[in-house]
Image 1 (cartoon, rainbow, N blue to C red):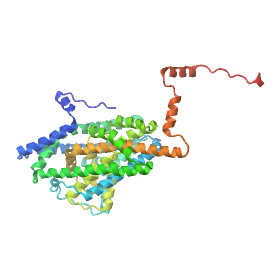
Image 2: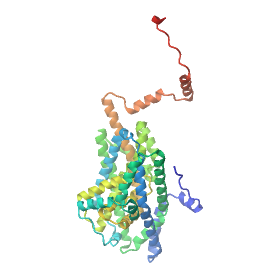
Image 3: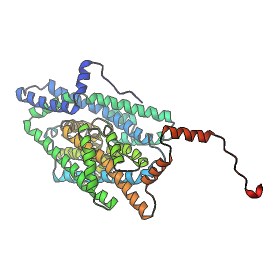
Image 4: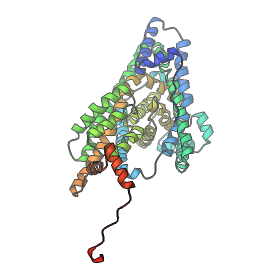
Length: 458
């Protein structure tokens, strides 16, 4: 396991003590203030924003490749059978969330006016047949060329293929792949550390372009659509899924998960940092440890409904801005791809935003335009990322509890003990104190006494 990067300079250490969300807010405010005071800078501040976007564009292809490969390679054979219902709930929720995000994008379309003049030569696909044709043509390519040119479809195919073959490799080989993924993620975190300066430049550039401060209203619109969609997923879509699973009122469980897990995740903005909170909540809910000890870390990795919402809405905002006509089947393909992207968004700073180019590539949107969307995502990330993390983390516990309650209901209907009851019984049977452990060890080490002979043998 690689050691986390720790800055050595006093100024860098001091900045690390300031919450990152406050740094982003400060960058936004500073960009607006400078635009009000001196709106005539067309070199330095816009260049800072463009350099930040260029840095993201450079590292994103390698990030997608190693992230997906490592996620598939670390899969343990035989574990899936124990958690299949929970994984099914995760996938259903992500598909429903992406579909809802697509509906909201059509009902309340968002546009970013600063992108309209960015790619006038764009030739959008003319239906699902051309989309699939482009998909196949992009998938069959040299992997090194794909990494250089940012061909995310080809990168995804090669990452899945290599990750699948690495499952049969030795532990040392898979550890190398894990370390490579962590190394690339560390590079991404270094780039993300410059987000406050990048956001300052991007906000300044938006405010000084034709349209001025009215451009910021577009950001408010997309934030409202994102947050509203995630709230509907949390209290509407998930409520229906849980109700069908446990056959009872789902809202007490949903409210408990949102209050006990979602609020802390909202402020930490990290599913991994919220992991201890979720494990403690599962113990409070009396869920079987053998289940939640696997599904909570797994959900932290693959259960990304909020990321799916973000990818779909931001991609469709680019589609609406560029005037691309998208049919139903092309949009459905984009939803499926967004779910695949969301499964790889865990543990990466701005992970869902960094995977937007993969969804954009389906509609022929260039990597340059897609990374501008990513830059806008960092501007609105103060609210978007917090809400997304709260949804992702709270549903980890929600679906784990729902699947366990369903299993308990089935077990009781058959007159069997629940998994938690079996674990409690096994824990009682095991020695708990140090004296009991020593006594059990001494008893196991002592020679077995000869059995008494039966009366007929005496």
